[in-house]
Length: 156
Length: 156
Image (cartoon, rainbow over all chains, first blue to last red; front, side, top):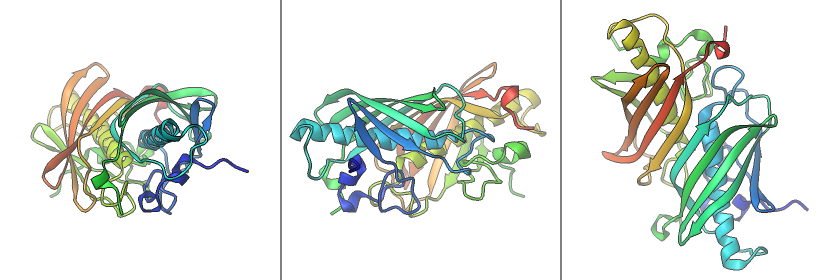
């Protein structure tokens, strides 16, 4: 049985995100999972996700880091509330800030892996550090400050 | 006569970028122009560029800031080389780092405006500061460190 992705626990009404909404047919449909203390997502770029020919568009990398990090924040907050086996709907997180360092050009003919760890979790704020790996090399690193979505912004 | 966008001066072989390549039919086709000392781009999000319902996906905002900033770096470098009326092919810039602060949720039913200024230009490096405005409010700010694309990465 495959583990459930973090994003599969988001409420239906909040699952239309271009990056990770399971109901967004035009979107990237990013899926994130725990591997021990790290959260991992894999993504295979399409040929049109190019920057200069042969390399992945930086905005796609930023998008993967963004949604993978808010997903990881959500999963970590749920673990804090309910323990490692916790289920039920997950709190949603939005991005307060996003930082990406592009260390080297990312080859477009590789499956991209983003690995994230929780750097800080305090109240409604979670800081997530990540790295993007392609063909065995770290091509970018990211840091996202995620904040739980305020009640008045949640769809109902 | 409409002014030529910065991205229209990129070499043909380097104009397939998902964010700003004029030959990328699936891409965002961002266009940037000078308005005095500021560079401006406008973008109307599609309905599928959503985050939580009603608001723009943060990865799209990062993408707009990214390509508008590298475009602005390219245009500024060209002005430095050839003066304000300079023409000919533009040097291309890649993103060394991208930082976005999301100040408030960005409404999806608005035309987005990104306004950028050159913060620093030195050798092959240009630092570009920007703000994203929707419905009259600054919803995000960005800072991009852009570096001229090394010769060996340029397509030919």
